Image: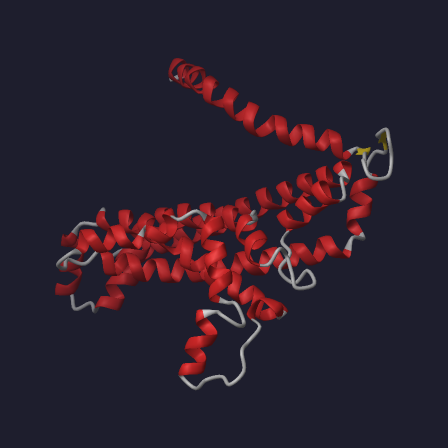
Length: 297
């Protein structure tokens, strides 16, 4: 057994080396840079300042507001994507004519480039020429155009709708793979015991696809938390910072204000918060999965 473990670690060395190069080194470099005050717009030479940038971050209201915006966007969008993705996966798992074509078409939103899709959604929510206002006016729901991307709350809603439309297929295809691995005999035996479809879903489907749910949630949580391109194209973080996420704030700090030291500190803290959130989410979902296994008859 010891020799097998030794061989396993030896085989993992190349992969670990690659991870260290593309993952550990950039974060380590960012942490080292965060210990310096380096702003090309106000000074000529960087100087070591210790944890000054982190102290500054504690009182930075814009950072905490962007963090709140990020959590709201991530939580709402991932929740909606999971629910809708489950519904889509259940539909695509049924046998019907043209199922292969429908499955292919359902993946189109996920395949589209995010920047192009963001431009399209920005036009859809345009207050003067947008399709949304036109439909609402034709239905008699509104009389005056709604400035979707100019209102703080509505702009966040528009971003969430665009993100849900694009990334729901990603979750649905992962859940569909889990659904197809469940033997049909389990449902037939459960039905013979008098179970209805909802009981079969709760007692068989959910426990058996929980690994796929965990994978989908972790992937989407990390992607949504680091969202940049969609927000940059649709709102640019506006209006008045209402949709500014952490990644947008970091981009502005580094590229617009040339404050590399403080930008590096933002990267480090955001990275640590993301790792902690992903670890906590994985732990909670793993506990749910273990408890849900008892539902399987």
